[in-house]
Length: 126
Image (cartoon, rainbow, N blue to C red; front, side, top):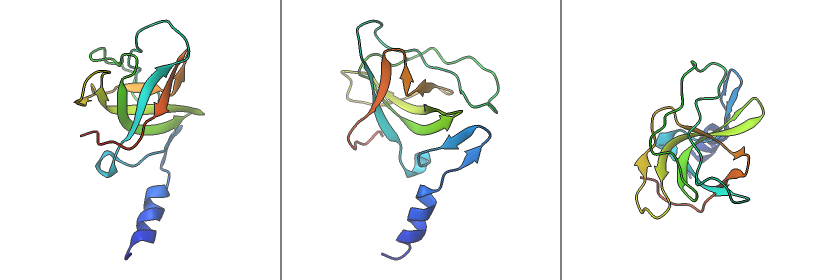
């Protein structure tokens, strides 16, 4: 077992940065994957959002390869001012078998209108 307790402590430790609390491991340690789902009919996907952290510079959200209904998003979960956000690193559109890099600065709220992010079973996002 060796150093597993030290690794567990490190992995479980949250990092605070301004109004943001990091909730997931760094990309090198693995990404969490979520499916973009909705509770009622309407739009066919959700546009990326800009970085919601208070310390982030004001910038526009990217507009390319935005997730459509059922897309899988891999990234790092954060809590920002009481709301959960996903800093997206990769996206796999519904019907595709491959993940692609998400555009730089792509974020997604865990809940917005009829949309929500649903955790998916363990899968490789690379």
